[in-house]
Length: 442
Image (tube, rainbow, N blue to C red; front, top):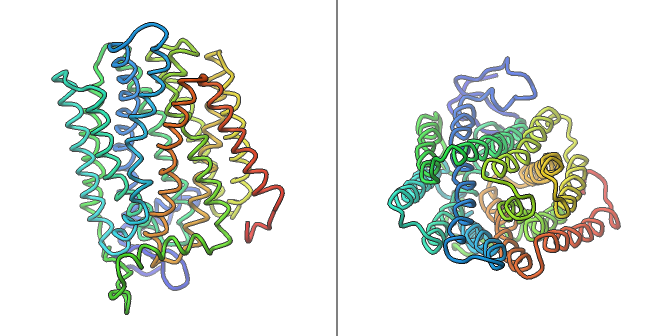
């Protein structure tokens, strides 16, 4: 395999090697043969552990702040609402900006974009830590800082998603997506567990925020030392004369007209709106339904992440067998069934097991959806399409979180989770059972 300074797909769709290519790496981890991807992958492990530490600490901090404001029967309802509100502010900008920020990923150097976004995320975490240490952090400030992080995330996601193929090429892209998911979910295991132990040992949430700020150094360093040319590939020919709006619409148009992925994208949006917000309600579920303390809450979140990690490893092993359509459907069953069971549980041991199975299904559902889409999309539209996809994947989550928070406040957490999941089951039956297609077209 020839040497080159850039790790991208060649004309045949095979991954080209850059200096540092490790051909001996097993097929189950084939994306790690590429030096640039190894750097990015290792940096992400450290950074995402810090991210999940911050998310876990922030959710628990909200429950403490609500207790300082009110007491009595109103506590649980207001906790559900404020946990949902703070979480929603961190992702709402993706819903509003996703299609527009995708253009940035296609027309600018993705690596430089990520260096800027990751640096701003580190600054947000450092500011959270400083305000927490000074004891001036309250719910309004949490909302403002979460909104800032959401704006940065809206720029970060399309660039991060779109750069994967530039690191490993088309041949190893499914494996890279599975390993990315593995990193994300390994962090989902480790981060909440560390935070739970820290809180149980009477460390403060500010310590978790500070560790997150420091963790960004790893991924920023990885991006800086990557080798190769990451110049955008979308500046060919007449595309320079296109208006910004026409460039933006190209990504939307692709998803509207690509029959092979349309149903997957619709289902992703439904799940993001009605099912995945259960993660935001987990602090309230832990505290008021399962009578869990901070350490137990951390391990509840860890159980979900542990199941997702196992799912990632299995997907990585299967990545070369082109089974994405089958595993996608299995993921739907495990995810939807798991959330239904969680909505009715009052037993901690049963919750640990159920959340692990739910995490497994969560990973298969969204990693497979991402893989199918990325293999289908033209390279020159990748950033814009992934921007639209992120709008549908991440964007409905804040709306759904607020909706679930409102329903949970008025009717209870169980009713909110059960109603959203049953509606999603009905949509899945219509899309994938009533009108089945072959694996080639889904």
